[in-house]
Length: 252
Length: 252
Image 1 (cartoon, each protein chain N blue to C red):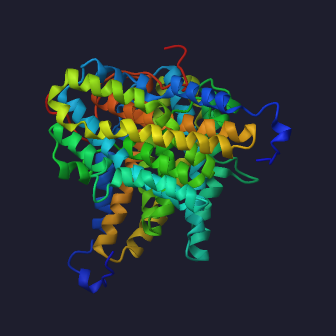
Image 2: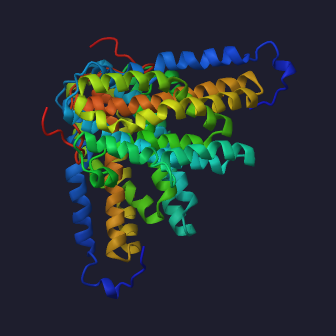
């Protein structure tokens, strides 16, 4: 990538508000709040078995989040960055006081009727779930730190989705209500994390090209979330349509 | 992994024939010759658009095969191994005499009616295709060389599938007949590669545990192939069922 000075980019570099708007537009198009599996969930149209498949598969994603954040931590340039970022590892792994997000997700899985040991063992998780989640690890390992941080920015969108989801889960699946601690905690954790990450991205993307790479990392992260729900939908619900941006068949 | 001598394993170590039978059993259960997308292909029930989606997505797999083999080459322990393995890179990338497998796959994609430049650009490839293929790179990078070599052993099964496919493509989609050079070349390349790889695995798996790890690598490779067809089926054909070994919904 060509290194350009901020001056040379003055006319094209996005302001903070413009960058945030561009990132939000990615979410509007690609974030998984629009995925049919979530729409069915919010309409109360998923069976207990389908919710079990969701809780089981997403457990693999949850269990890898602190691995992902530890990779970013290992690439952190200074103590200040690492101090800010290590909060995420603690949020998910827990400490003496808090049980952590992975444990909370296990409680959700148990509320669907699954056995915690089986969920942790990962038996029956869809291969496509593993591939999508492992791609998230690939991204934070192999791209620039800026892009690794930017890939976490789906948290810009998660609060609204989690609020809606908690309301709808309580309404349609009251037997799940005891398992919602994970989401409760994320309501405050996610916006804190997103604030740090978007400020980091704005301050460290010195060129428009870097701003675009950061935006692409967020798109790719959205594809990773979307693909996990595709795998669930197509294995446990049903039909046939390509995700946003994919090849469309013209004649059939 | 505990290092055990061959003597200690004498009662459990599989013979060459037993190991080959165990590897072949993996193929019987999980190789993608049983995938509904292939069954439809062989029955002539795929549209031109569905075959385009297949050729486009599998191009990404084909284009990464010599990358995968170069990773294995870079881990090769000695000149004899690397001399044997580099044949694979040449088979796919070509040389002054042969055009190579990637070019041949492009000709197949063109025979379906796609534009070669668009296929190479990768526009519209399903994210799930990328994730599955990239997992193949993860495996050959992060596991033992033995497992990396073993993951190539789907070539034990490919000759039969390719023979059948060529016959069925010519029968049901005669307009594709000019694009089958890729498969013609694989009919002789794949068995040569498989012979080297299975002998390498037998000679280098010194314990039963290593034989089991090699077998698991082949299972995981089969999952990678299967997931690519799942993504095609579910995006361009239709219904809902989990792959072999995945969580099954009991009540619905």
